[in-house]
Length: 93
Image 1 (cartoon, rainbow, N blue to C red):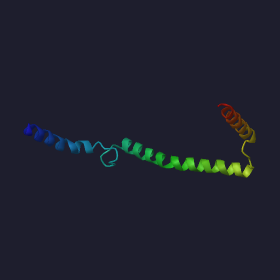
Image 2 (image 1 turned 180 degrees about the vertical axis):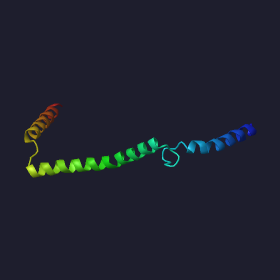
Image 3 (image 1 turned 90 degrees about the vertical axis):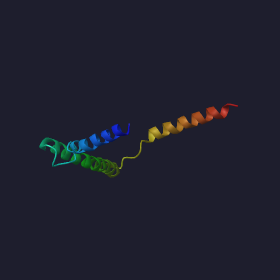
Image 4 (image 1 turned 45 degrees about the vertical axis):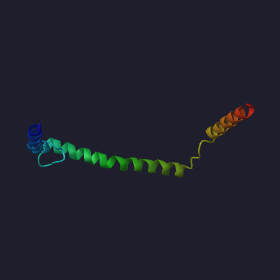
């Protein structure tokens, strides 16, 4: 039993370097297409949050600049519904 565990550990230790060569993060071991795909995905994932923040900032800036007030009609309907629900529960014993 102990010999089979040692044999398995030896095989795993010898197979480790071959697995490390397949790592997409290793620029030297990867072919050019894989390296380019890794760099492109890194750039995309780095820019995406910045673009989302910039989009939200521009949207808020436009709303403030135009002076667009919150939709008062929808607020009134929400208040009306809340009052109706409150009165419904107040009438029940």
